[in-house]
Length: 513
Image 1 (cartoon, rainbow, N blue to C red):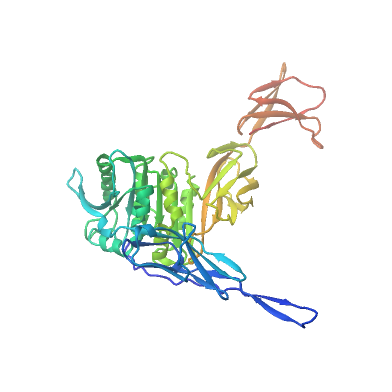
Image 2 (cartoon, rainbow, N blue to C red):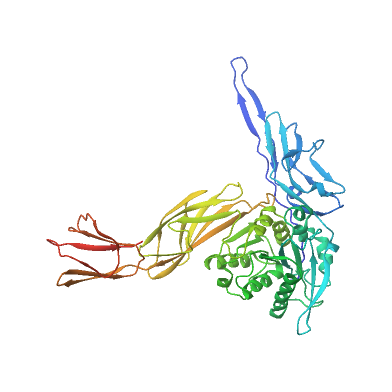
């Protein structure tokens, strides 16, 4: 999709001033103003990427009396960096990292959220190559290889799709304008977890990603895995704007192949969500995006979660089309999360929510009319705002008890249906100036199969038979239904079960897992 990108100015909150009034015996009243430092969210203090040797800066917006400043890199004080602004002119490789600033006065101190400065190579670091398939059809692509590529070492492969900028005639200009396209090739990433980054392109003049193009991309991926030492368990897909549906359908074309995906501000492809449920996703959009409506991304999130996938979704309150894309791409939490995924393995890396009771498995069969769940939620030390649950079959839902350790009681189940229960945690967006939040989930498919029992008189007693539910089964009896006192007759029972006839009237029931 061809879109015009633009910056959106974020709303700033007015700092609160606390007024303290002290009354003494000798003075009628003294008004004392306590001006604790307040750091206001600002676009100038959020993650950003800069080309090595170019200029960049972070600026803190703060209020309070007699403020002093101390900038830190990766938690360490930077000598002499005691102004509102920290500048990098020119930016060097040693400047890459997470920046915070402590704002202090006589009343106290406040510390900003970390803002990553990515030091990336110039766009010309991407080399243009043509891949030609057996039918002679050309697929242009741009590729960045780790600086010190070692053929004896295996590397992750990141395949990125773009809408605007996904044309061979526009890609280099697009990449030069938006250095966030190269965070996977940043100097620190190359030193810690280097990746091969490939950006398939459409031929000049072609406006959309077709199924034919995607088949060629799969051929290209196979070619690169033959040419380079690629870790077959770490092949990732990314897509933004008009490249999102391409990433979606590429995953659907080769089930069980990709380890993880990140997409932003785009729309769903033609592949069924069930074919993508084993691939962890991180999705992003902005509520004020007028180029691609956020509902399109929300539909993708719901489709994935309903299919049983773990899908992380960041929705910024502001930022627009441009902001949601490049803020998501430059958020360290997202980059680290993606590179932590492994093909065929359960989703790892926070934010992470887990259902741990009554099962850690994705499926459960029960004969009960309701269900209790419990589990955990973590988000890289960020507060969990809330945990909620939804049963998509009967449209019920509520807020769970607790956050990092949570429970959900008496979730109603619809009989003879597969109840898809989505448990979702909510945390920060990692973009203070844009606002919004990130949600992340686990899903449990519950087959509600009520136990249906029959009883028959036999020469040697009575025979109980039943269907539904799930083992282990227990058979219980009571002599009074008005005030039943159920006692267990047999545990780990299997149908049919013959029992001796006891004295008086007895009533029986079967309970399942």
